[in-house]
Length: 84
Image (cartoon, rainbow, N blue to C red):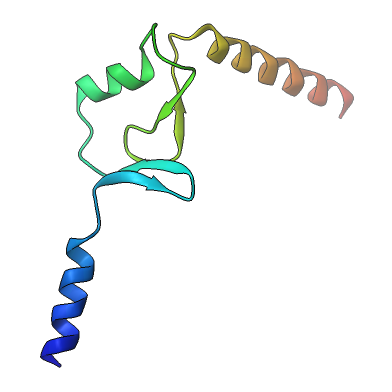
């Protein structure tokens, strides 16, 4: 039983709080306002940034492409509601 407990402990200590899994970034560290600002509002950054907390991507709201995306979704929803 001691060997099994030791192996489980070693496995749990190998988990990293941030990294990449299945080609997508993850970050399970505590979010800070600096990290939120750097990822959600960074005019020089890319449109998709790693999530502040969790697995996947967030939109950088300072990037013009994010607003084009929001406008496109809004137009598509308006058209769908008019047709329905």
